[in-house]
Length: 61
Image: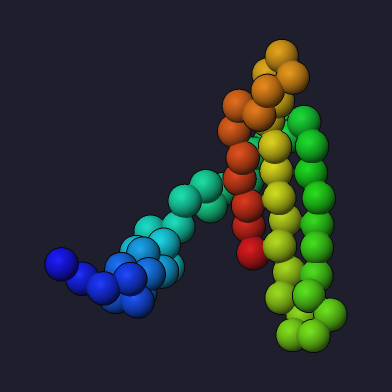
C-alpha cells in the first residue's frame, strides 16, 4: 500500500495531466479574475448557478 506522500504525488500528477473543470463557461452567471502579485500567474473562475446552487464551475489559468 502506498504511503501518504506517494498517494499525494499520484493525485497531483493526475490533476496536472487531467485537470478537472478546465473550461470557460459562456455565458457564466458569475466570473472573477485574479492575479498572483508574486509570480504574475493569472486565473479566471466561472460559475453557472441554477436555482441558487452551483451547477458548473470552470477555470482558465
